[in-house]
Image (cartoon, rainbow, N blue to C red; front, side, top):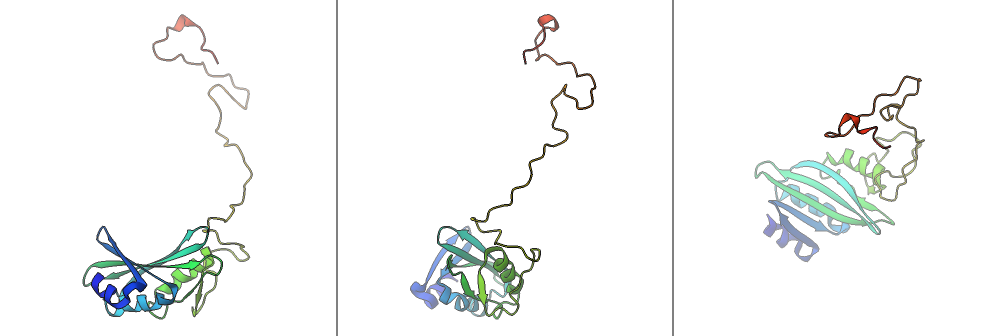
Length: 180
């Protein structure tokens, strides 16, 4: 498989193998060609997933995982898009299963998949602002409230007598009360 990839893409692709899985990195301009080659020429007809990885300060990595059921081979396909203008051609024309994953990646990271048939928010409530899986996204602070059971032994909020303080193991009972 790696020799076919190397012959077809030449120096336009970086191909690595680790733990029996091949990873192919290409430029965004070669993204659709790589997906099509994996499906048509390598037999990776099963689209498993697609997601984004935030790599500050300058890029997002888009990763797709495809599978060849006949050869029982997995393949990771990756490309980097600039953080300032995260755009990539849609893979829906190659793998129909990419539809949902591209919508999710668009909503969570802000990556625009050009040519997607219905690139609209999928999971977040209407009016949500920002991209929650970006590393620069600030989580909303919530009011700090003590857990109601966060009491030390002997403390009571209802006036009940405190429990007897126990001595550490091996300390005689007539030693006195432990220091607090």
